[in-house]
Image 1 (cartoon, rainbow, N blue to C red):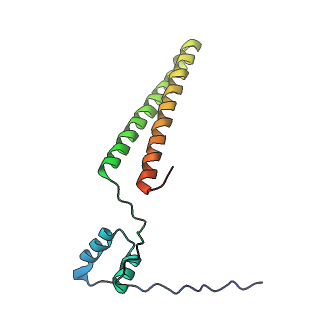
Image 2 (tube, rainbow, N blue to C red; image 1 turned 30 degrees about the vertical axis):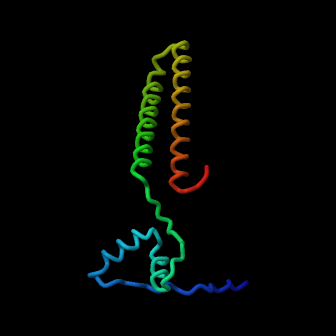
Length: 128
């Protein structure tokens, strides 16, 4: 049986700011947009590593757009569920017409989901 290679990485060095400074410390870390580790390293070395943390700032306009899109998607899903509930009472011709309307709604939902995906890519600073 082979021995597993030992990890070369050292354990973390904990930092606990004084109680009176905790809120200020956390606010400054948050404002920097960096991870706590990157913030402390930059403060210790006096240099800006340029590394940004994984925190994402969501603009109010983008968040509002996403909320609106999600609301329209929820309404479309609700309409589709209502139409499906009507299927048991319909004859063949009405069923075909109903399925056509459902197909149109699904196309609308797909388009809105694509819009949300694009907005999220923009938020993440990535290209779709």
